[in-house]
Length: 614
Ligand code: ADP
Ligand code: ZN
Image (cartoon, rainbow, N blue to C red; front, side):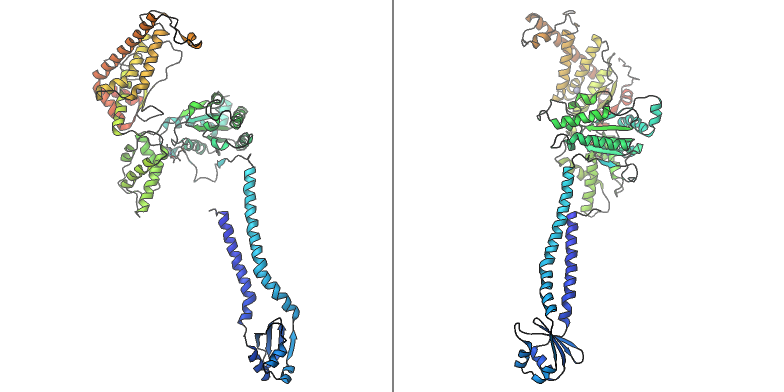
């Protein structure tokens, strides 16, 4: 446990005060304990010949009796003791027998030194000491402030942190990402194997995904799996006030990582520094640019056998500077999808593992009630549930606590992603099912790889098809099938709910764009193989004037409309004819939120993407 330095100082001062108090009492209390007598008592004792010796020091009078007992008394200041005693009726002859001495030195030294010490100098010393420790700390802080160049990397070493070690086991879902990262793990573990083959090792891995999907967690898991040190730093930390500081830090960080190689450098929030130059309001920010350049220089400078892998995370892959994505830099991109219902259940289980749960906890129900939650949100739900249970002095966490925790997390202000209501979820499910079904029902289309109703960016859901090979020659039939597929979502909405929603706007935009190109760029319409290119005119600022006549423009519009209409008809036909399948896909989507290729093909009864026409 670390004690706050201020608290530590405070305790120190208290201890010193206690010691001072002790010293004080040792010096003063004995004198108080001795027998105090009045001067008249002293006179009586003198007359009774009991007194052997009197020592005067200042105003205090020390009396020694014949029986060696002692007593103290006080005299008036500036008076002579013997006169006073005689005045009080002391027998002069008897007084003369008493040995009277004055200890001027002793008296004079202690009478001023001791009080001065205790009341004057000691507090001064204490205050001085207090100030000294404070300034020492401040200086320590200042030293840190001025030592900008040291990278403030957090290091999670391979050894000695077994408790903190995170492996893939601690990461739920994200199956594809884990598979891709296994290769990196293998390289970090057995670099020689790869070097012997002359293989070029990836240097940079970019993790893309919304906040809280587990980018940091996954990067740490890679380090844990490979058992290598993990150097972590956040892009926003680089944004310092003085130029040159950020790049010095980068250099420092890379030097540390190279020394500990094999190791992982993790740069969180890469977009804070790696933003595409010229984007954003900040204008040219020298510091950011220098830092970015330093990262690039360091990555380019990796020797072949440097066992350092740079992992970076961002939720804004779209705004990254192209220089970062070039080969030899962050050329591996891994997208982390938000968790579906199955993953959410697994994440909840992971975060409830060490909590005392009531017996009948139904994680499936909790997962079903948390569409759109990220891994971080779910970890939060598990924690809130524990807090709620503890507040009510329960011994276990109950289902009710979890359900209440969901609401708490939902109401939290930080959630950015859109949560679908039950009705919205149904609409999105039928919409995506429509796309997938229309695509799979036409020959020549790409196989459906994944359907999901978990929002990703702007879209309510998405249907992924195998990426079509670029520059592949394509036919008009294929384009028409593609337009029909784009309109499939809208067709399904109309069929099931009687009307379409705004969710189709992006589809319509893409469909119209494609149809326009079919007619104008590719000459695939009744207008004949003519290119109606108007780019040049637009460039020259006379965009309204085309290199074709008004009449042709009208014909073009007509052709485009016809293409869209026939595709729309086709999509509507397919979803109507195969409504049972559409419903089946949508229902599965509502339940599971994502459908992978195998399952989709099982539902509609095809194999390996072979589209069947019924
Ligand atoms: P990111 O870096 O993507 O913003 P983090 O990796 O910091 O998100 O995730 C925040 C927290 O959310 C993690 O520490 C973990 O507790 C939890 N979490 C996120 N995703 C998962 C997951 N797939 N499995 C388990 N826990 C997760
Ligand atoms: Zn759509």
